[in-house]
Amino acid sequence: MKFKSFRLDMVVFAFFAVMALPAWADGTLTHLSGQVSVQQSDGKTLPGATGAHVGVGDTVITGQAGYVRVAMTDGGEMVLRPDSQLKIESYKFAKEAPAEDNFVFSMLKGGLRAITGFISKRGNRDAYKLRTATTTIGIRGTQFDVRVCLADCGALANGTYLAVHFGAVNASNTQGSLAVAAGQVAHVPPEHAPILLPRNPGIGFTPPAVFPVLDEKKKLMEAAKVADQSPAINQAPGAQEASPSVASNQQAPGNEGSSQATAPAEGSCSVQ
Image 1 (tube, rainbow, N blue to C red):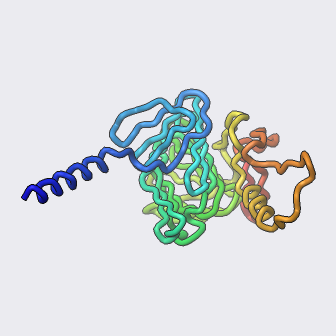
Image 2 (spheres, rainbow, N blue to C red):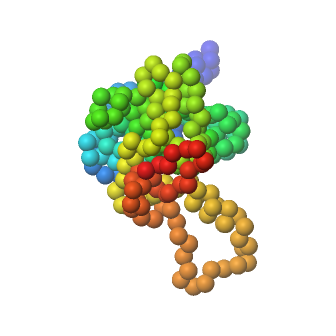
């Protein structure tokens, strides 16, 4: 009887020990500027800090002049603009289980620029979703900007604005569905179907220069170049590969809000 009681005590202890462990970190705050905070799933709000981790249930918040870059464990990256709130609803990435990939996050306020990681590019191609008050956006191997307007975007009408710089997405709600390709901009008004816009109404933003540039096309090209290189070939002394993580965030004139100039598809509008 003493043995059984001891074993039961150990089970109870193990249970509460596991419950006391912090949530598994799914993302890391790598760059911050201005006011940034994280509201944890238990309601506690902590000041943002470089190297701080975020997980399921956490909400990343930026102030009036705040910017933050979040790097996810699958290689995806996001930069939040000022006055934004992003909640991680669900996240699962395991290298050995592609079919179980899952990333769902909600843009409660403000906007972001993002490029996808491995999630949606391997086993489950519908695993990556962004939700707002007016739409659910399905994303596959993409670089895009999103801005949510709730009577806080000046002259812009309420709703969700989406500009795709690379790849393609699908915006849908109960009123309809719309495919948005590279170079196109869409608007999803409240209680209306998504529509394409003739031009970008100005939803882009320019992060601080110290932030890494998000450039999906360049990232893929460099990855392919590294894969093709022979281990026997060495760079000349002093030669150094350009990296998107140290590139300048300066935008080309007339192309604010995009880390690259993307040629629009035929019949689409350009991203300005």
